[in-house]
Amino acid sequence: IVCALKGRRVEEEQEDAAARKKRGDKTQKKLMSHVGKAVLDFGMIKDGDRIMVGLSGGKDSLSLLHILMALQKKAPIHFEIGACTVDPQTPEYDPSVLKEYLKMLGVPYFYESHGIIEQASCSLQKTSICSFCSRMKRGILYSTCKRHGYGVLALGQHLDDQAESLLMSAFHNGQLRTMKANYTAQEHGVRVIRPLNYCREYLMRDFAHARALPVITENCPGCFEAPKERARIKMVLAQQEQIFPDLYSKLLKAMLPLMAADCADPNAVVVRDLLASKHAAERAMMGGADNLDDDDDAAAPPVPAATEASSRALQSGGQRPQNARGGKQALLP
Picture 1 (cartoon, rainbow, N blue to C red):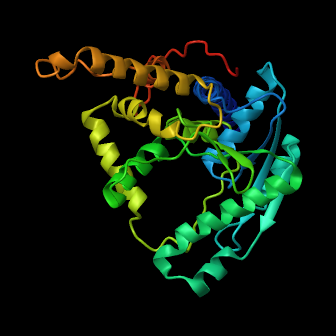
Picture 2: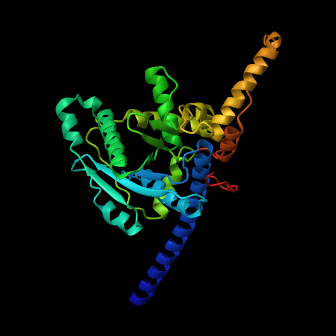
């Protein structure tokens, strides 16, 4: 009986492993499609680029690292990948597991340990620690890139993050802003890219689980609000998505001009399409000014090709697509 039970347990584990691999392969295909399109649309990666991934150890940055490595193998151009972790020296955060993991992957890894939280606690009010810590980490990442010859910094913010930042900026600052997709931090001489711009958060969660990635849960003592503001905005979006299933595809369409701001590649697909739409709108306004009172939509600009393609790719919204079929996308220009 004992032998039979052990044999059954082994069979179940093998079935679970096979199912997990199948799910991971399917999710990776979707992520590569979305990331490849974002890279192409915004001109994020060029031949000869040396890319440093900001690796916190969370599901998003780990997924980004793996997807970039997969793209690296298939891309028609050559680029290098490294990773950097900034440890703010808090007892709750232990990224030591990443050292062996990156060694196993064969990825150059840079570990930066700095007493950021202690410094912030001594000099700032508690409510400002999060922004202070974020700025300090970014500065350390810039310095590490420059010191080791990496000209591009890849960050793991995804479409959910972009939408949350848009609403937070509108609600609290009265401005329509979100995170840029591909821009140059002029004072540091480092280009910043966000290849997960078209990816929903649940894809990274599924991928990390299916691939059993060594995800680190960061329990930062600097986050004193409960619930945090970003968590509240996430709940607002989740409620609205129940009513409007294609919410995120619409938000992506609205945010593309904001993402493309200060784009480091003036010939990127999104930039060209937005300029073409702007010129078409200007011509429509000049040519149909007399009819605007009768038809308020006469001057509405056409939807950019890149915008429409991205919208179609995300029609599934935040729900898991039941019969999603990912069309073939060019991974890189």
